[in-house]
Length: 448
Image (cartoon, rainbow, N blue to C red; front, side, top):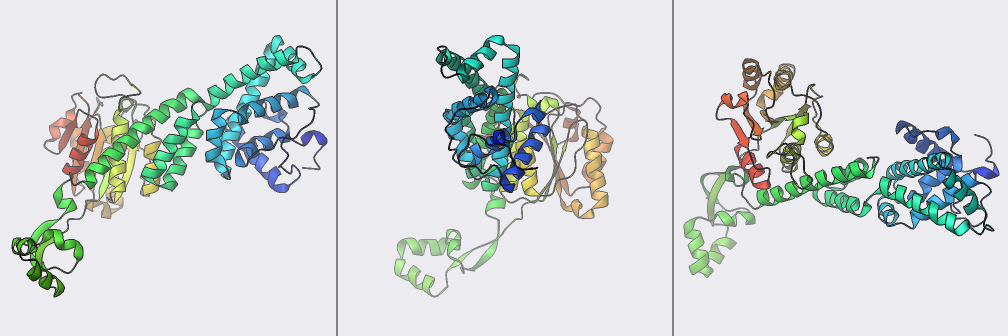
């Protein structure tokens, strides 16, 4: 790129439009907008690409002065409306000094600008209003500007939506799942193009986070299998750790209550005795999760409701709690096709948070691929296979499924929903779930 012309200087006072870093960032915005298939990108001036980024990346300071053409005047109107909106107040908390999120939101702002240009080209009244608004001496200038402002605010609302709810969900994800995953959640939500879809995603994520929170609390309160949390008693030994005081033998417990001096002496001399426990290791888990279209629905009536928990949300919450509570987990997702084996916990959680149920179901192929994984990697024989599905598959091959399941140390099949499935014929290792809540989730964890 050569030296910028006067028209390439944008409306922000605190941006150096000739700086190499600015040119690099506007190119990144251009490439991301191209991937999002925003039309007429070649018609956008460089300063618009740069402004769209820096409005989000730092506190914007607008240049004063007259705009020398209608397009520049329109851009200033859009930016002014945006930075004074409730949406921007919430967005800027997420995007300040965050290059990735600033690029994502820059693309949304460009979409608003391009959409507004298209409206003006198709609507003579809006075109005249833009000319009037650009002409400060025109008597109808104020009325025209008000008309354009209403159109702009409508587009901001459509593309940005309820950003406070988005921000609350992102903060909740950060507190529950950690900052790294919270950042991924922010990208996932903000990268969704229009508000109606984003609202649906936010509601699903809120249901998921609520399930994870309630289940984790119940887990930590000891509702889960005592063998996992407390271990199995194997005998008596001398107490050598302070946290073993909860396992004092009855005699020493009586001393603590009725003969405190003797208890204090035995504590000081290290002669207290406690129950010895052998901690049980949590099983290694090979997860096979159904993400077919039917998993999008609730259990009761196959009608998705924002206030209800979908099958896939409950399945994702179960898997996330397993990962958070220290299980060694690998995972495969499937619908009509089988997706790659995932071994990194962070990648598994990211995928679980962004699952979109689509397509048909092929349970037999999913188990066959799991069987092939074991043949290629014998270490997986020590894993317990956990299949989570609603069982809606009319082409089950139970013989092949049994063969695949038998290659693992153990298995469990979690059937979500009221529908009858041939998988129920596989016996006591099959658990049916009718209520998608934290208590049923903990019940399943106990059985795993």
